[in-house]
Length: 177
Image (cartoon, rainbow, N blue to C red; front, side, top):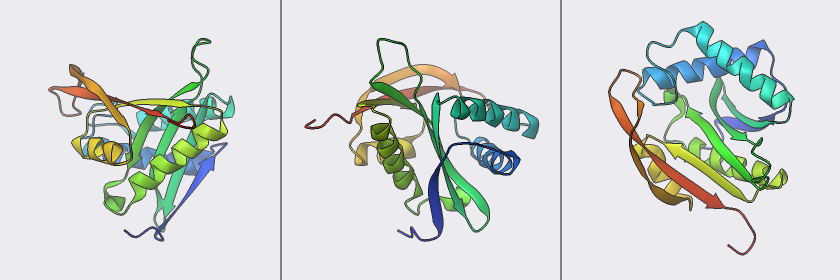
């Protein structure tokens, strides 16, 4: 595992440069077949618009955004959706865990997950949830101690079309659990 080829940080404000890099990662993941809420082909203007909405949530404190960069720019990201209903203040949703194809299989996904869990703790969250349509991601989440809840068949469309299921996971961050 080569962890020295990228750096990871929590981003508290986004301007155009990181938004462009995040758009590149999102487009790369969709082109690679990842079911991450967008259909192929994903136009750059739609990807940029998505990240601008995320930037608004980050600025408002509704989201925590972690970004990884290598020598070529942004290569990975993950979000925590912190804003939850009033009866769930202890919970956050892990969202849009994306790793550019050029940066995969080098420990970046695990590092993003660890950083997201640390950020959740800093924000006072004790329960995390996520869903995924990726078998590779499932292996990572289970290796990192996430608990599989089950699969919802026919949950979303793959980027090129065709229904896919999604697997739901949770991770209890409360001390002693």
